[in-house]
Structures are given as C-alpha cells and as structure tokens.
Image (tube, rainbow, N blue to C red; front, side, top):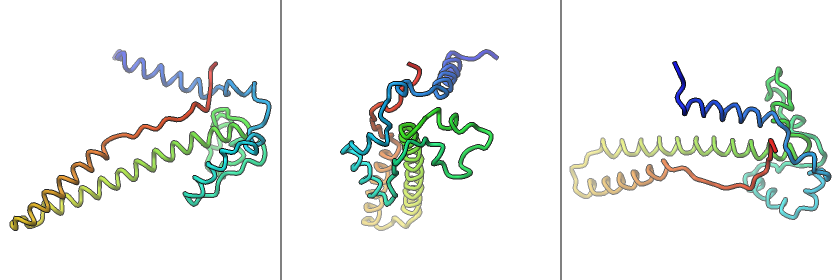
Amino acid sequence: MPMTANERKRRQLEREERRLKALPDSSYVFLRTPFHEHLGRDPNWSSVELMFDLMGIEPPAFEDDLGPEHFAAPGSLDPDQDPLEAFENAEGSIGRAEMMVVHLIDAAVELASIINRYKLSELQARRQEFESSDLSDPVERRTALEAVTQLSKIEDELQKNVRRTFPQWRVKGI
C-alpha cells in the first residue's frame, strides 16, 4: 500500500532527526575555553543554582570537563549502545550541560503530563459526586451547578498546552 504524502514527510523528518542526532555539535570545533571554566566567570550560574535549590535538588557541579557519559547512573544506559551515541555525541562539560537541558525539558514535560492527568482525574471524580448527589434542594442544586461550571472551565484550561521559548543551545549539521 503506497504511503500518503504526510507519511512520507513524517518518515523523512524522522530520518533527518536521526541523522542530526548522530552528528557532533557544529560549534565544538570553535570552542576553546572548556564550559566548566566559563561557568566560574558567568554571574548567571547562581540563578540556575537557585532554581535547583528551590526544588530541593542539589545543583549540578561542573568541576571538570567530563562529558555526560561519566555522570549517568549505573544501569541507565543500554549496555549494547555506545555511550557517546546515547548522548547524541555530546562531549565534555558543554555536552553534559546540553544534555541536561534536553533531559530537564523531557522530565518537565512528563511531570506536567502526570500532574495534568491527576488533576483531570480528580476533577472528573468531583463532577461525578455532584451529578450523583441529591439536587432536590434549590440552594444545593445552584451550588452544584456553579461548581460544575467552574470544573468545566478548569478542565478546558487543562486541555491547553503551554509554550515556553528557549535560546538555541545546540547547533548540528552546519
């Protein structure tokens, strides 16, 4: 069965994404100062540390130029996969920082999805409670209708996506 134009385009984009992941960052050949040394001079690093402190998580320390493969928890990588390939050819402390951004975004997206499903589930349970309650009293009926209306508005908001913009941190294929 022939593929549709959308399927062909999707496969082409997937191939291109795999090809780019296999490439090293195009800026690496021009970077002279190791990233971990740059952080010692960058006053904004304290803002990153503050965000981790607010989450109750120990901020990452960049004390040397080791890459992300040196910090992965034991057993977290596929033993048959080349560590450099697993980390999209990210090298040194700059590669570790780049992969941290990728993994933090992925973790934030997944956590947001879990929170969203939890809230929608809880709101649906409250809606069921209101619908199965005795609404013969006019005051209780009005209160229930107001609550269900508010629940609907909250559910509508939870159906939306949030967009955040980031500065580009990786450049491949140039």
